[in-house]
Amino acid sequence: MVLIDQRIQHNSGIPLGGVGTGSVEIRPDGLFHDWEIFNAGPWNPNSPACKGGPAMNPEDLVFVVRTKDAADHVLTRYLALREQLHNLYHFAWIRSVEAISFAGTFPVARLTYIDDELPVQLEAEVFSPFVPLDSRTSGTPGFYVHFNIENLTDEPVEVSILGIIRNPSGCNQEARKPHNKLVDMDEALAITLGADDLTQGACSTGDMTFAALGGEISFVTGCTLDEVNGVAFRSSPYGLKLQTFLHTFQDEGQLPNLNAELPRRLAEDFKASDLTVDQRQKLLGELLEYPFVHDKHARFHLVDPEIADSPELLDEIAKNLAELSDKKSEWGYGALCSSQTLSAEAQASALFTLGWHFPNHISPTGENIGHMYEHWFTSSLEVVEFMIDNFADIRLDTIALPESIHNSSLPAEAADAVTGQMSTLTKCTWWTRAGHFGVWEGLGCCGFHTTDITYQGSFPIISLFPDLQKMQMEHGAKFQREDGRVHHFFIPDFSKVDNGFDRVDMNQQFVMLAARDYLWTGDRGYLERLWPHIIRAMDNTALLDSDGDGLPDTDTRRNTYDVWDFKGCPSYIASLWLGALKAAIRLANEMGDKDRAAAWQSIYDNGLASFEDKLWNGEYYVLWRDGDEID
Image (cartoon, rainbow, N blue to C red; front, top):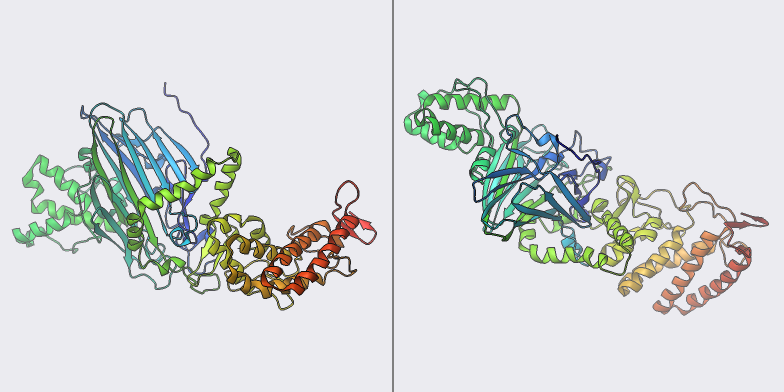
């Protein structure tokens, strides 16, 4: 009897990608979900330039491990838990690992692959550059998959890790002509996934680069999806046989090093008999760069070399190419494989890196607002070069952050909450070419840099990336209304704000945020630039005090609670006002503005006494007081 432990399918994971670059999630099933890197979808829900379905599906990047022990016993496993990957009818020798243990602590996910039959212990660290106080490195559009391998036996074991990826360049553009290019990076090999005939300025126009290093790297530069999953041609007089480069991977523990950069189709009237022997050999050499041709020819060569090199087989290959083209099997998949032999109980590693460069971030207004990463990279290959060159330092700095939090005196639940909430900085941020930065209030929901949300939730930003927090505060200050009212949030990008100026808690929160940021960073220039806005915000809120008791009591209805309107003098609004006064007094003294400091101190003293007298009922502070009415 087969016993199966069924568990819930988790729909969340650790987001990967840089600050403001778009993201993708690694989940407990070992696959990569929610590819929000193409400037569309929930990350940019109303983009006018992006139509069609998802550009990348979870199965479009998958890893496979193959081991061979000293007794020549070969095992091959998908490093993912997905039934759709299996083709047990034709490939009974490859299936998923038994289970995956997933430890997600943003910004790092650690996956331990569990399979009692494997002679090795295999783990993966999956993370993006996320370095405190270094927003430039943390704004890198890419991620690492770092495999650590341990031989559990007392004899040598061959271990090969294969990564297969789809070319998404120009996704949903009908005229796209994908091309894959192999790049030798000395220590690493990379495949750049791009396309020709793309629409200039379209959100999916750009490229992606997939690289691998560690051990011996082999490759398949380009092929169709059918050549990955296995393709058979029923018209063959030699019988039905599936062709795929996975046969070579299974047999030899590496890829056949095939370098087809573009799809291929021969003329409709092609006849091999019209060519000379030299011409046939030259053409066959070119076609052998295509996986199904390579696999087909190699297997024929084992049986009968004469058939393998015959014009008849070449004619059949020409028909096969046409059939692949006619069935519209998507071309553009590439694969890289790291192979190495581990001695008894030895350890080794293999590193895969993915970077992207899709610069056309189209605002719902139609403007191409781009990405900040365009200032640092002109292509995805440059992204990957940067990531590989700096891997050791980036890894240490990135891993140190969650480790320091979880090794602190915080309770485990609090540490989990802190690191979990930090993921918003990858999942929900825009950072445009012009340098405008903001966090969605909710992914694709509401707006950016919502003042009250920033007041409540920006402590990770000021502590990790103070330049970004100051950046969004200064940009927000530009939209302060002439009467001193501070904006509510930016929508649909950073060029406009909503009409939430009636919210009476925005001004106080803005002032306290400015004070916190200044005291945190000591940036005198920042304080000087915001000082006029602070004065106007304070003066405007002071107008809400109609009876001179130092507390707001007029037009206090709208506030951060959205649908819960207040009246009279609310404790919440009044307490924010006292906090803003305290902060403003400190800032006025910093600026040497003694007159304002004294005036605000007087209001504060009056308001503090009134707060106790007006709002404390002997047991608790009332919600509000409006004349004789108390709630």
